Length: 194
Image 1: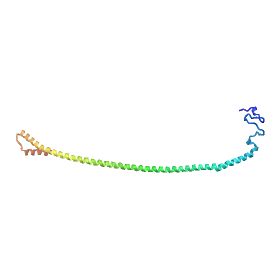
Image 2: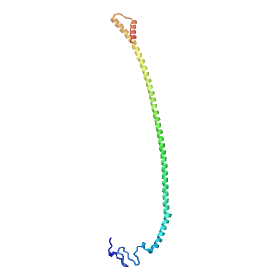
Image 3: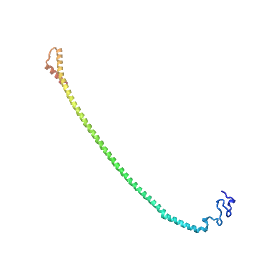
Image 4: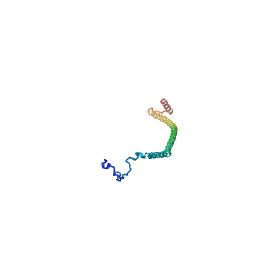
């Protein structure tokens, strides 16, 4: 804001200053009070007293409290670091134990699998041996039955052959042949065939 000459004029005694609303006093100097040389000794005295009180307050109250707070934080951080190191070592021990148990479980699983495979193989071998024994028994019985049927068939063949030869000779020659001759002829033919 611009100051006009009317506002810049110093008001007369007893008049109210238009900008501040305060009456102008007589004996009042126009110097700013901190720069007034007549008040320097009192200002210095209050400066020393105030500085001394603040210094004592800082030394006796504030600095010890701040130091205590810093010490507490330092101790808490140290405790937290120790706790973290302890928890890390516990976690490492737990991981090592887990890995040992896992490898032991894998080894046991391998043993169980091997035992189960060997047991199944032994059971299969036993079943196969039983089936083979049963089949060889059935084969032996079948061979015996076939041999019996074959022997019976050959016995019947000899008789049928003998009757057939006798019927053919009778038809062709018109004579009778003895059973001994027919039997000898059939036997000689059988021996030549085998």
